[in-house]
Structures are given as C-alpha cells and as structure tokens.
Image 1 (cartoon, rainbow, N blue to C red):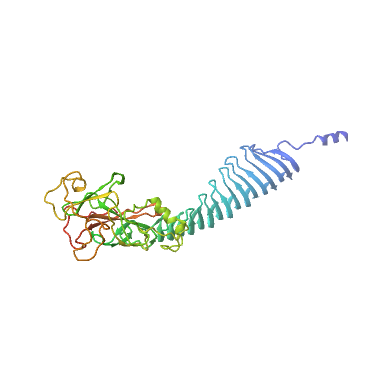
Image 2: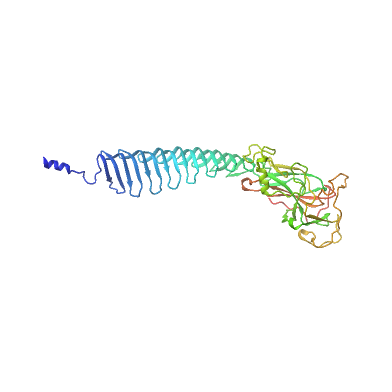
Length: 473
C-alpha cells in the first residue's frame, strides 16, 4: 500500500499533453502559442492569457478552447489594441479599438470589422459618428474635421455620396448632392465672401459659374465733360451665357486716363504726374496704357473727387466690418460674416449675373496730376513719338488753352469749371474684388474705352490704328 501510495504522489500527465482542469501553463506543439490560465476538460476555459511569439497577445475570457467573451487583444505588427467582446476569436459586439498609428474607434464590431453604429477618431483628429459597413463609413453620418469643417449626410463605402451639408470653418456652406467625396449634382453654396451659387456641380466645380466680366454698350463710349453715365455689367459663363446661377460677387468700378494722349485727336496730350504719386501704368486691351484716374458720383458713399482707390485690404475690411452688418445690399442665405455687409460706394454685388453702376462720372484731375492741354483738332506739326504712340512729354511746345469750363455745344449745362474731367481718352474698368475670391478664382478685369469730348456723345472721327482689341477672356 505504501508503495502504491508513493506511486500516486509521483504520477504526472503524459509529456506534451495540455492540463486537464484548473490553472496551468502550456506551450502548444506549434511553439508560436503559449497559454497561461484556466483549463476545463483539457481545453482553455475561464480566464487566461494567450501569448504569441511575435509579441501579440490576448487576455480575457475563454470558452471550450475558443476566445469568447470579454477580453483585450493586442497586435504587435500594427500596434492596435482592441478591448471588448469576442466571438470565436474575433472582435464582435461592442468594443474599443485603439490604433497604433493614432486614433480610435468605439462602437459595434462584426467579424473583426467596424459594422453598425460607432464613433471613429482618425490619426489626424477628425471625428466621425454614424453608420459603418465593412469597416467603412456607410449610411448616415456626421464628421467634424480638425480644421473646423463639419459634414452631415450620406456616405457610401467611406466616401461622401448622396445628399449632405458641408459647413466650413470660414463660414462657407454647401448643401446638395455628392459623389465620390466631391460636390456633384444639384447643390447650393453660400461662400464666406457673400457669393451664392445655386445649380449643377461636376467633380467639385460649378458648371454655370461666371468666368468673365463683360461691360455692355458700344466699343467706344462718348461723353461730354462733366456728364454722368451708367455702366452695365454681365457676368458670363464660358459659353457667353449670363451666369444667372450666381449672386453676390463684388465688382468695383474705377477709371484710368490714357498714359500718353494723341494730340492730333484730343484736347489733352498727357498728364504730368508728380513723382510721389506715380503708379505703374495698366495695359488695356485697346493698345495703350492708362494710369489711375478718380471717379466722382453724387451717390451716397461714393468716392470724393480725387480720393484714391481703396486697397484690397480696405475693401475686405469694409465688406466684413461689424459696423456694416444689418444694412443694405444683402442677399438671403449668405454665410455668417458676409450677411448684411454693404459694399462701398464704388462697388456693387452682382445679382443673377448682372450689376449696374449709375451716375458714374469722371472727376477733375486729382492733386499731383498736371494736365498739359492742346487745342482741339489735328496739329500741323507732329511731335516726336513717345510711349504709346503719343508725343514725348519732354519734347515739343504744347499750345495751352484754358481748361474746358461748362459750355456745351448743345447749350446744355455741364459741370462747373474745375469739377469735370478734361477731354481725352479714358478707360472704365470693372474688377472682381470679391474677398476672399470665390473658390479661389478672381475674374479678369473688364475694360470700356471712354472718350471725353466737347462734342459729347455724337459721332467723332476715328483714331487711326486704334481699333479696340478683344478683351482677354
């Protein structure tokens, strides 16, 4: 009996066999796996930890030899760690996945993938809350981007597709159709600049947006000194149709005087500009250069005669200033910050692709602009050629006359002496000064050739070799 008893004390499980019951440590025939924990009937059952040779592990509940129940698994290759419910060794049910590359997911899982409703924060800090399918955003969802943008709407296989609303951190809003993660289909954008576009989009671009500014009217507009005149503008698409789908683009009217006049066909040869007021000449599509010239208008808020044009920064401040909110020139549906902003006197917001400037008038020469006048009509002696086809300001002796005062050939009363522009060649310019530019693009400046003459708007003899050129589109 003693010998038998001693034999029982030394009996051990056969080598290579897993423990039957209780707590035990076992290295599987495939030495990649090692288990420490509870056993039942020779199977892992209860609490335990399964270690893999590459450093990965699972720690949690086991049932009948399978990973099942609540636990935590770590993947050494990716650095991912999942804590939650498992079924047959895979994450299934509710859990939290922390990604080694950054970010985490909390929500429903199925067969190791995101499935159902959950919340995903990616490595960049963008947060998505909504539906998932096959590990991707799918169905309805909301995302808050790190840059302040938000999106609410439909998703298909990880991309925005269907109907959705994008609210940008700068105040811009898009509502409409999406495809392949970009605007596509019918949609409306209220841009932070105050521009509103309603219409079709393709691959993120508005189909019917304006691409150029066109000033309506004759090729050369003729006016008498001191006369006011309207400037009517169209915003046109590539096919020259009016961009009726677009509202709110800010247009500014300004003027220039020909840098060097033609003495044979104009009463004014050129302006001598003080050195401290000189600006770089602007090339026009009419074959000559111009320098800035002031406008004078009786409309409230317009520039005073001789006032310098506003800088882009001044204009942007005026358009977004809190002091201007709630006043005129508004557009329904404009984004916060642009809603209620009133344009300066020399600016208008386009409506349905149209804008109009009324009572535009050239002012008198500003301080620093010293006119050198010539008698009207062809000169008998030609002056030497200078820049732009006119005489060199440093040569020749001009025949000076008194500045035009207020007598009109038709007997009408014009502007008082000293308040009107001298006869000569001028340019009206309409610029897109929308700030910030709509979708990052500013329209090219439009030009109108303006001729001021005592004869007024009646027929005038043409200037040789000076036909208007097509404007850049």
